[in-house]
Amino acid sequence: MIKVDNVKKSFGEPPIEILHGITFEIPDKSFVSITGKSGSGKSTLLYSMSTLDHPTSGSVYFDGVEISSMNEKEVHEFRNLKMGFIFQFHYLLPELSALENVLMPARRTGQHIARRKRAVDLLTEFGIEEKLDRLPRQLSGGEQQRVAIARSLIQEPKYIFADEPTGNLDSANGEIVMNWLKKATRDSNTTVIYVTHDPDFAALADQKILLKDGRLEI
Amino acid sequence: MIFLAFRHIFARPKQSLLTLLGVSLGTTAFITFAAIMTGFQTFIIDQLVNNDAYVKISAKEKMVSEKDLNESLFKEKNHVFWLTSPSGRQESAKINYPLGWFHKLDKDTRVLAYSPLIGAMVLYIKGGISLSGKLQGVDPVNQAKVTNIASYMVQGDYQSLAGGGNRIIIGIGLATKLGAKLKDTILISVGKSDPIPFKLSGIYKTGIVNLDDTVGYAHLRDVQSALSRPSEITDIAIRLTAVEDSQAFAAEYSEFTDEKVQSWDQSNASILSVFSLQDFIRTFITVAIMIVASFGIYNILNILVNQKRKDIGILRSFGYDPSEIQNLFMIQGLFLGISGGLIGLVLGFVMSLYLSTLKISGMTDNMRINFSPKLYLMGIGMAIAASVISSYLPARSAGKLNPIDIVRSGE
Image (cartoon, rainbow over all chains, first blue to last red; front, side, top):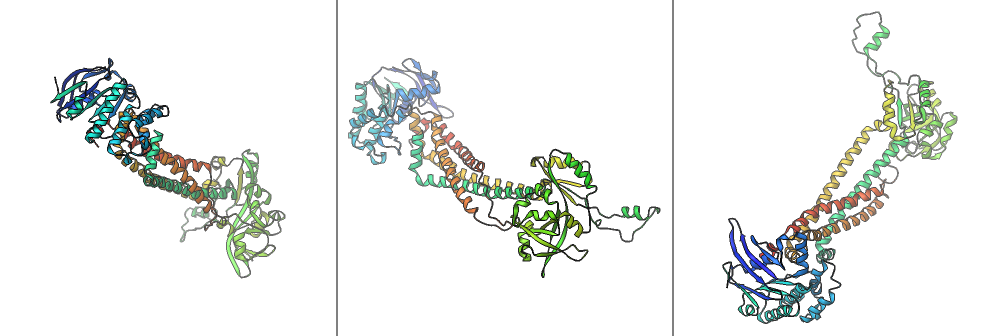
C-alpha cells in the first residue's frame, strides 16, 4: 500500500507551491490514474511519490515504510527491485538492442541472465519477438514504448509509475499500452499509477486522483 | 557498467579512435624521447666513468705572482715595484710527493686500484700530417685496472705498452686522420725538443669521438722522458670499489691537500648539468603531450556526458546509483587511456628499435637507446594517470546529475 500524507512541493526562489498538502492512500494491486489540467501538478505528484523527487514537506509511505527514512543505498535498491518507470518518451538506450534494454534493470543486480527468458516472454507477449536484437532506432514509436513497458516489468515490480505513457502514441497504440498496463495489475501483484490527459484512459482506473491547482479534487 | 561502457565506446568508433590515437601518440612520444635521452645519458655517463677514473687527484696549476718572485728574488728589499707584473702559470704542474699519496691510497680499503699519470698536450706527426692531441703516460698494468681502456682495443695489444720502449696506442679517429697503421712510427712533438718517435702498437675505439680523435697512451716512463720530467706525475687516477662513494671520497681527500681532488661527476659537472636541463625539457615536453591527450579524453567524455543525459536519467530511475553512473564514464576514460597507453608502448618500442639502428654525430657507434622496463612502466603509468585525471571530472559531473531534472526537462 502507498500512503501519501500531506505532501507539499515547492519550486524556485521565492518558492512557488505546486502541491498544497496532498493526502491519499492507494491499496495494493490498484490501477490508479492521476489527471488534471496542464500545470495542475500531476507529474510533480507522481515523481514526488516515486522517490525520483522529494516532497518539500509531508511523507510518502510504501507498506508503512517512510521513503525519507531510507538511506541512499536502500532507495536505489527499492527503486531497482520494487519500482518500474514508464515515461512519455520511451527513453531507450540507443546502443542496446530491444532485449538488452529490457534487461538493463536486471543487469544492475546481475540477474540479467536469469531474467532473459522473462524478457523474451514479455517482448513476445508485446508482439516484438521478431525484433529482439533490433536497436531502438529500428523500431516504430509504438514498439519502442512497448519495449519500455517490458523493461518496467522485468523486475516484477510492486509499483509502476507511468508519466503519460500514451502521450506520444496514436490512439490504437495508446490503447494497446493501457491494456497491457491493466493486465499487469490483474496478472501480477503490481500497482500501476499513471498520469494521463486522456479521459478515456483515465476512466480505466480503479482509483482516480484528480488534481486542480495542486489540490486534490474529490 | 562495463557492458554499457564498452557499448558507448564502440558506438562512436571515430571519437574513440581519435582519443585512443591522442593517448597513443603521447605515450609513444614519451617512450621515444625518454629512450633516446636516457640512453644517450647512460652511454655518456658509462663512458665518463669507465674511460676515466672515479676520482682523480690532479696537480694544481700554480700561477706566477709578484709576491712569489719578491720572496725568492728580493728577500732583503722592502719595496719592489714592477713595471710589468709577472704573470702566467708556473712551468709545469706536478703532484708533490707522489709516494705519500700511493702509501695513503694503498691503505684505503675503498680504493680498488690507482694509476699514476702524466699528461701533456702534444703534436702527433706522421708524414706531412700533424695533429694536436693529448698524450697520457700511464702505468699500463694499473691503468687497465682503473679504466676500461684495455677492453676498447680494436687493433694491436694494450699489454704491448707494459714493456715501455716508446710504444704508443692511439684512438681510431686519430689513427685514421694520421693514416697510421700498426707498427708505424709516429713522431711526437712536445714543443721543447725535436719530435720523438713512438711505435704504434695498438688502436682503441671508445665510441666517443673526442677521445678517439685526440688521445694517445704510452708508458709513464717514456712520456716522462719525452717531457724531460723524470719521476714527475700530474695525476693519480683512482678506481673505488663503489662508484657511488666517489663524491664523498673526493670531498674527504680534498680537505687535507692543496692538490685538486675531483670525482668523475665533479670533473664533468658541465655535462651533467646539460643532462639535468635535458631531463627538465623531456619532462616538460612529456607533460605537455599528456595534457593534450588528457584534454582529448576530457572533451570526449564531457560531450558524451551531455549527450547521454537522457540515458543517465533513465539509468537512475532503474536504481543505478551516482557511483555506478560515475563508473560508466570512468571505465570509458580508463579503457581509452590504458589501451591507448599500451598501443603507445608498442609504437614507442618499435620507434626505439628503429632509432637504435641509426648513427648520430659525436658517437662512432649506433645511437644508444634505453629499453629499460622502468621506462615502459612510467609510460603506461602516465597514460593511466592522465586518463584517470581527465575522466574524473566528467564522470563525477555525470554522477551528480539529478534524474528528475533530466526527466522533467523532457530531453
